[in-house]
Length: 124
Image 1 (cartoon, rainbow, N blue to C red):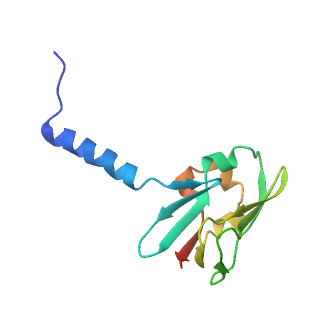
Image 2: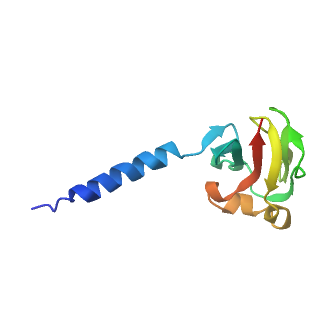
Image 3: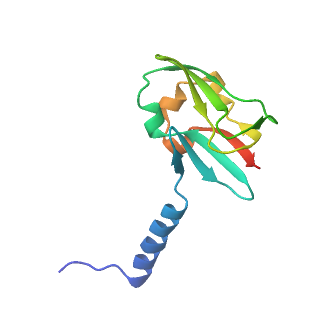
């Protein structure tokens, strides 16, 4: 006879799945986006965006405090296929950048999608 899960376990699995769906990153081309709170957005390189590259030797990030408009270059990746600009899907002011990518840019190709964030914006 198969062992059945308790009602509590069933409820926990249901809400965990519901939470993960609601908080999954949204994809905009090669960039993923997560909302933090109160107009704070975290942007990163999606799994789809990193597939064509075998090496990333340099990441050019924007400066903290700079304002980006929708469609502006968010970051430029120097890859085995040459410089690859990534544009931002939203307007906002740069609050944080992932400085570790400037020291070891190859991490963009090895980390999980959620761990390879690029910048944090405060949306307009």
